[in-house]
Every structure is written in structure tokens, then in C-alpha cells.
Amino acid sequence: MEKATIWKSGVKKAYYGFLIENLGSILAVIVGIIGAGAGVAGLLQGEVRVGPMILSILLGIATVVGYIIYLIGINGIKKATAGGPDAPATSNLFIGVILGLVGTIVGFIPLAGIVGSIVGFVGLIFMLIGFNKMKNSTTLPALAASGSSKLFIAMILGLVGGLLGLIPVAGAIIKAILSIVCLILGIMGWASIAKSELRA
Image (cartoon, rainbow, N blue to C red; front, side, top):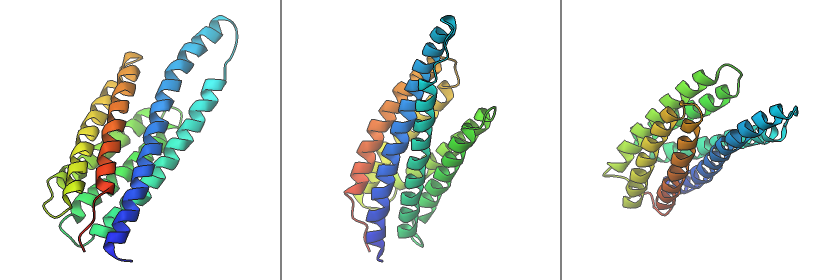
């Protein structure tokens, strides 16, 4: 399969994986906030409400599935740029997505959430480095560089949101808002990359 075809296929998978992962994350945060309020109200009334907890688990599974699809897509992009000047950038992305996936999975383990957050944070830094290299690339198509610029900004906001998310209650709300902004920038960025044609 030629590199241009691998690129197109990888970008498409990365785009859909990004959407699923981010929507799952945003909805999980929102459900978590609502669930915390409902849980307190339920305890005051002597009830245990499991609906939000079950929904959070399902959204967590959707987030992991999205990350896996995203990883498969980024791997395709990495293969398409292998041996070229953009290989280090796509390798950074690949490592970052692996760390993000591991961080997300570890975050589901009771009492290991902080470890998952740290691993995910390191993954975001790797992705930030990768998108920075891609946005400054002189060999990638212009649309791919432009899209990478938007994704670079989204990664910065993601890092800020991740740090602020550590603040109880208010942090989760700020993180949810920044996550929505990241999602919009990410959609714009991946849509731009999806329109690009990799030179053979």
C-alpha cells in the first residue's frame, strides 16, 4: 500500500478515535459532576443511586475504545511518514497516545488515579511535542501543518485543563469547559489534516 493511502486511512481512524475518546471523556466528567451531586442527595435521603456510576463506567469504556482507534490511526500516520523528516514528530505522537491510553486505563484502578493522571500528563507532553514539530514542518502538506497548529493549541489547553482538574469540584467544571474547547479545536485540526494529501 502506498504512503498516501496509508496516510489517508490513518488520518481517518485518528479523527474518529479522537472524537470518540474526547466525547467520552467530556461526558464522563459531566456525569461525574452530576453523579456526585446525586450521590450526596441520595445519601441524605437514604438511597444509593447507581445510574450515574454505571453510565460513568460505560463512558470510560467508550473513552478507551476511542483511544485504541486513535492509536491505530496515529500508527498509520507514523508508518506513512517513516524514513522521512516528519518521522520523529509522528513517533512522538504515537508514544504520547500510548501513554494517554495507559494513563486512562490505570485511572480506572481504585487508588491509582493519580498515577494514571501523571502518565496521561506525560502523554500529553509527547503529543504536544509531536504536533509542534508537525505544525512547523516544511515537508508535510500545508493543510496538515495548519491542522497540527490547531491540535497543538488543543494540547496546551488539555494540559492546563488536566492541571486545573486536580482542584476539587471547580477544577472538574473548568476541565469540562476546556475539554469542549479542545474538542472543537481538535475537530477543526483533524478535519484540516483529513483534507491533506501526502506527497509520495
